[in-house]
Image 1 (cartoon, rainbow, N blue to C red):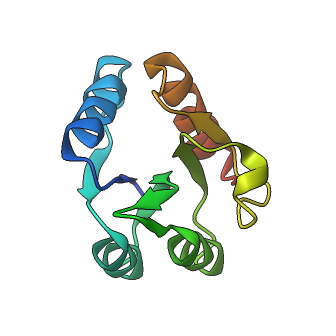
Image 2 (image 1 turned 45 degrees about the vertical axis):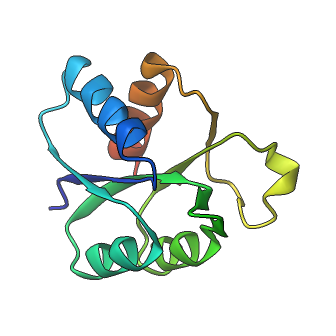
Length: 119
């Protein structure tokens, strides 16, 4: 059974804040961080991912490729961004959280994904 929550964000401090927010909210699952597109795709390919928190912009590049990889692997994900939903033509039905991300909304979104398997 997949048990790892993967946070994909190129800003290490933001990723650490999100990890801390999830821990503070009671998440005991393994939480890993990938800081870019290549490390994220590599980690997703190894399997065992329950859900992903995906920054829409990774070092100036669209996270579209990561989202497509997640969809191919049937891994649910939530997108975090400063952009509006209509600026992300690859978003599909993935939930969207505006940055700066509210810790309670982040925890609720991850909980919804891990319980429902949606995304």
